[in-house]
Image (tube, rainbow, N blue to C red; front, side, top):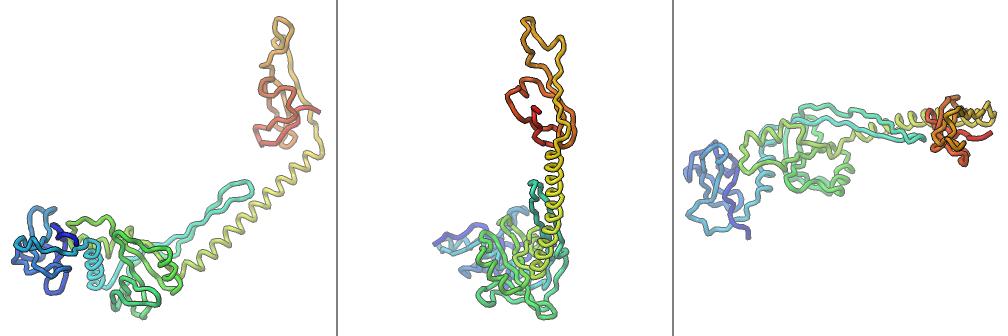
Length: 305
């Protein structure tokens, strides 16, 4: 069994979880441990040292205290108390490559950040094959699922089961909550902070994803047609064999004292595709090679006629 924790952020007072700031100091707090139900004392030092601990007179008592479970319990109590939550926005992004390897991206906003009010909240109620941490019902009795994550996040299998119900669901990330967190701080995390929430399921996203995929595919098809037409044009230009004159320029500086060829001589070429005039030294374009790439359009230019 685990030993008692020295720092417990919330204690039970009249069956309600409270933090240290709302009760008297010491054993006069009249609070008990949510796990072993033995007395707690409220320690009120500096702000960072506000916490509950087990009654020191019962230090031999072992307790199955779990910080994760306690944060779960308090988060559920907070949502049940306030009956609303700020939902995060939801955007879907998608990208595809065209035949040239160029990446094209599209994005659509499915849901704007907003407040969602609940007419009632139920905890740990089975729904099909799952038991969500929280189910909030709107005025129209539409269920909205909420999962609380401290160390264990929703698995792929659980996400699939949630999505199969075609219900909206979010997960609240409380993994960085400190052991001296107050109720007000946790309320900020749970209720207001949209950055700590992510969508597990949103029925509107299904159609939005299909629409976005169709839009992107249409864009890629259009780009691929342009690419195909450009290739056909290049092939047509090449087959017509336009002037492919190779200009080899030599002057007095092109031979050394022994009458040999200077390897830094320029060789001049005209691209068959884009008609770009460029030069390469004999080192870069020796007479043995048959083609050289145009620096302007990348076309393979013939080095001899």
